Amino acid sequence: MTKILMVCLGNICRSPLAEGILKSKLANTSFLVDSAGTANYHEDNPPDHRSIAVARKYGLDISKLKARQFTVSDFDTFDFIYVMDASNYNNVIKLARHDEDVKKVYRILNEVYPNQNHDVPDPYYGGDAGFENIYTMLNEACDYIAKKLKQ
Ligand code: 4NP
Image (cartoon, rainbow, N blue to C red; front, side, top):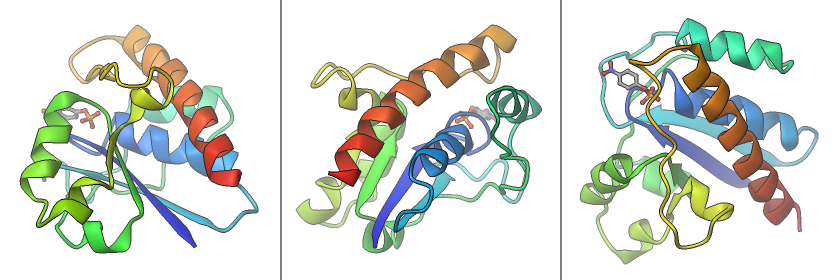
């Protein structure tokens, strides 16, 4: 089974949305998709209501997900670790024990725009439009990821 982890800072806005989107695109196939945050600010909390709302608008229910912090053991569990931005990348790479760990970590928008290192912007302090924007970005990135993984 191929295991994919989505990572952001709080695990309440971007990565649970990415988890819900990718799960929907890999339905009925043998993949495991999870998400985590580099920080523990929101441990055990459900996703932000604005992420739940934008997911629901597109037919996805992410309301039952619970935030957790990324741990070193995630490098052992997962095959692909997708981070949302440069800060998440640096925080995850700091925990890598060796090159095999480093090689599992990818900037999610590089799936769409290879080598360009674009960020999925943190929408936490913005308005609802930011959540629509990250949905669009993540939906496109997850299309590329699902297509690649199913090959
Ligand atoms: P996320 O967004 O990393 O996409 O879940 C954030 C959520 C919470 C905070 C920052 C970003 N915060 O500072 O509490």
